[in-house]
Length: 45
Image: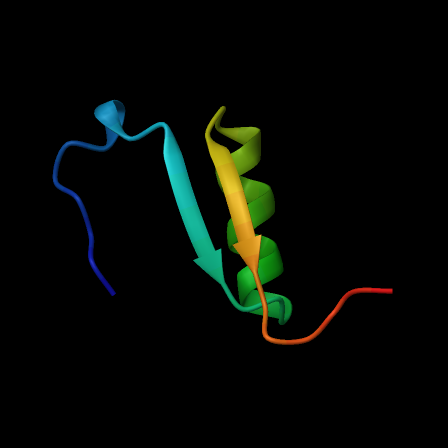
């Protein structure tokens, strides 16, 4: 996993995996004002 040192410049992120950790990460990043692309190998209902 890559971690940026200057997180203020990050506006768009990709979260790979829709399990509990991926969901929590996506929601937290969205709440922080980031644009999140959430990708999983399965289709969502």
